[in-house]
Image (tube, rainbow, N blue to C red):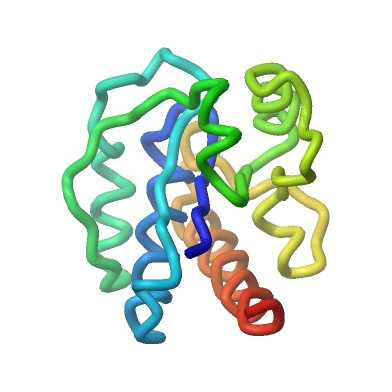
Length: 152
């Protein structure tokens, strides 16, 4: 089983969106038993808060099933529990490496690196462009599925 953790700053926008988009892609492919998918934050400032309402509305509009969840903070011991940490931006990279004390096994990847791009996922919290965020996340998760098809 591949254990994937999506990570962003607060775990109320991009990382839960990626979690639910990836779960939907995995479900549609009939591969639920092959993956465990979760999300977390590098910061504790949103810990315990629900997914940001505009992100819930975005998922509804795009037909992405989701359940109610609360933001959780990444912990140092998560490094040994997951195979892959998929981050949304360069700031997440710096923060996650600080939490883990590095990345000795090469488990940290930028989401859009799976598409061949080396850029951040648009952050709707600051820019308000939720459709661009969805587009980035969907492209990254779709490319991840193709990546796993090649390594399975």
